[in-house]
Image (cartoon, rainbow, N blue to C red):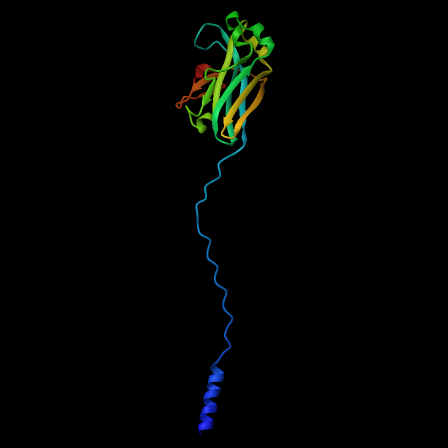
Length: 198
C-alpha cells in the first residue's frame, strides 16, 4: 500500500508539473506625450507685390495731376523680419514729364515717407505687409502715365539670419488709387476711385 501511495503521489506530482512557460515579452511603454514647439521659420522668404501706375487729381497738397506708382507688398515663408526698406526707381523718361517742382522726386531711388521701418518700432507681423505710393506732379495729366512704364520697385529686408533684396518691374497703368490708412498705422493701396473712399 505504501508503494502504491508513493507511486500515486509521484504520478499526481508528475502530471501536475508543467514545463515553465517562456517569459512573456514585456509590454512596450507608450511614448510619452509631449508638446513640441513648431520650429521657427528660417530662410530668405519672399515678397508678393500688387503694383500699378496711377494718376489722380484727387489729393492733398498743391493742385495738379499727380502720377506715380502704388504698391502693396506682403512677405511670407522666411525668418521673422527685423527691418524693411522700400525704394522706387523711375525710368529716365519720367523726369521730362513732371513739373519742375517735382524733378527731384523723379530722379534716383525714391523712398516713401517711411524710409526704413524696423522691429524696434513694430513687430515682425506688422513689417510683413507694406503699402504706399511714390510720384510727383505731372505736366499734362494722364498722357504722362506711359513714361512710368518700367519703374523698378526694390524691397530690402533684414532678419536675424541676414539681409536680402527683391525687385519688381511695374508696367501696368491702373488709373485711380486710394491710399487707405489702417488702424494699426499701415497703409493699404486700393485701386478704386478715390471719391468712393476706402
